[in-house]
Length: 236
Length: 370
Image 1 (cartoon, rainbow over the protein chains, first blue to last red):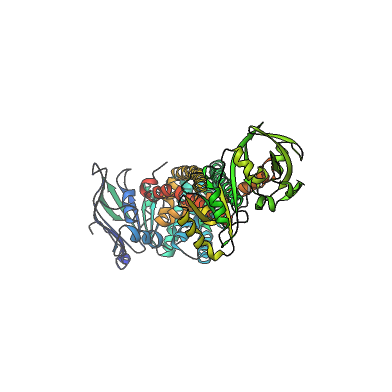
Image 2: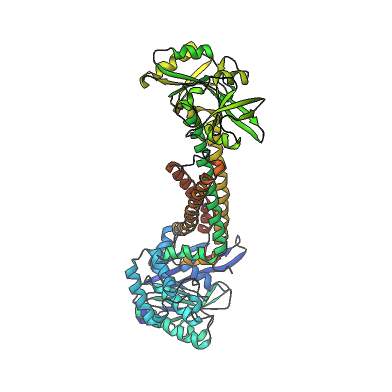
């Protein structure tokens, strides 16, 4: 992999997600978003994807999580190619968690109900799901908000809720698209520290798109994208 | 639990829209239940009127309506003499009008006919029936609306008749009718020598096939049908039943369109939410189940409400004095089952396109949707 830079410790861990010569275009190739991206991330690694708006960060995240499919090239998660149908479904239910810039929670449901949605999709038993939710809300400081509707939560609480939801099914990979982009600087740093702490504790691979170089510096690796290509990859 | 919450939450977001859909299904179900029950009751009543104390009806083959049927007196006399026949009573149906009452059913019968024989005589005596000219017996309701009692003179059609008795029967049509001796009725309706039908009771039910065969052989212009066969095959009954179900089905179709409209709006207004569910691992099946769940809840509540409204309407109709005896509206379990089945089908059909649309929502595109 041309863009892979590793610390000695990470060299020993397995590749969990990779993209090989991935191209993505829309509208019959009139809009070219990714132009032959090679990328990989190892177990437990935290990777920041940086670059200007429209450079393809979000598209790459969507491809890595199976939400979209490359026009050309290959994406694998845990050695298996990401495809349509059941494969994608398994990926979204068990291997990948998503956090977005807008929290994307269902406003009319409570924090607890929002977080239980992925477990309903995956068919997890309610008792197991509630125990997992208890652990996560304790660690994110949301226990007292469990029965509150999303409308009653602050921006930071909503993003922490979205983080809890993404981790409910114990995914091995967390894909975060500007997770602190809609928050003020102080809350943004708090949420990001929490994010790093959670992925470190659970051994999760984090791939995060961000404009904030300050946050990106806290990741193991920083990948710069421009015009649908990875132009630079470095250790932080 | 969360799944159900998702369904109910969404219905609760747009309460008025949901209520309108529920009302659409409810009124459709109520209309179907009421119309079908009342028409089935009417058919049952008319069928009972024909089959009073008989098993078989003999009438003219290929007539569209029994009012146009002619059974010759010679055939009546012959059949009455057959060894397998216990009794055979000719009946002539006619429709006459009176002041303020454009339609009065008139029955030309013999004194032995069950209608006269088994009725409760509220006034007058059975033995007087057929003893004089221009005499009639009135059903209880006919006596009411003609404001007549025994001894009164009533104008019916082009004639004036003396009322010699007032009777109460179990049948609303008969209670609203006028009974004349058969010969008088034949003269009055210019149908001398004929009856509309011959109602036959056999000594043994085992002879039914032989009887029908004998009628066919001796009187090719006539047909003999068992009461149940008649109910199934009489075109007027079939038209009535088909009309009732068609009217009800049209109502349900409209209700179904209401559900479909609500569900389509529901999907359109939460494309982003469906995308969130997709990102969190919801399959096509789970998305579709959620949409069908919503349309199912609307249909279920609408159906229950509709059954209650329909039942209340039927009870109310039965309580109206003017309709007493005319509305034999006992709700048949089979009708309820059929209505519920059709309502469920409507709910599913209403959710089909919205579910299909929701299943095609792509998370990546929908998450950009504002």
